[in-house]
Amino acid sequence: MNSNNVAKWLHFHPLPKDQGERIVNDMDINNIGSCIRRYRNEKRLSQDELSKLSGVSYNTIVKLERKTVPANPTIGTLRRISGVLGMEIGELIKES
Image 1 (cartoon, one colour):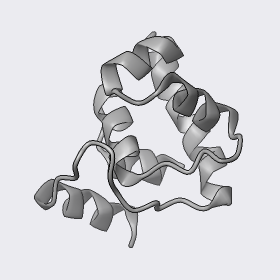
Image 2 (cartoon, rainbow, N blue to C red):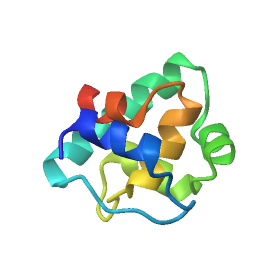
Image 3 (cartoon, one colour):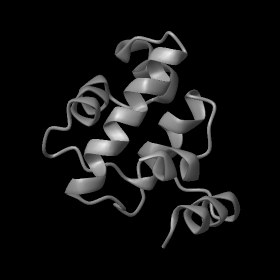
């Protein structure tokens, strides 16, 4: 499923807060983590602020940005993070 299809699917099929298919592999997680950090810094948010605003645990945010295993986010997690950053999940995945 490409990033445009993921964004379209999510628009019509909202996910419960903590559920969702894991959609990234080890290679993608490095790029997604860098993208999250870049957009978070542009918004002048700390990792703690992003965590509180998105409802995603602080440890998950840190693991994603540091590209440490086992940071394998669900679509729901990426959706909440991208929402706080003011972007669609498809943009976040596409940026990576």
